[in-house]
Length: 68
Image (cartoon, rainbow, N blue to C red):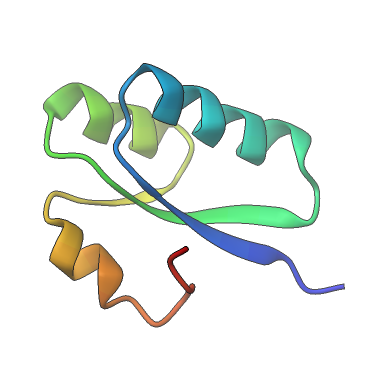
């Protein structure tokens, strides 16, 4: 089965919880990119080997997933 590829906009408190839960608890899903301009959010994305963008327009243009 193909994994569902997910992009997360914002890595505040809830975004971090979603990213961590998807990466660690959901086998058929993968966080392929995140968008967060803060250094703290960028470091959190790197911790889980997730590509981070600081501009939502760049994230939206990524062909690897379909934003919802």
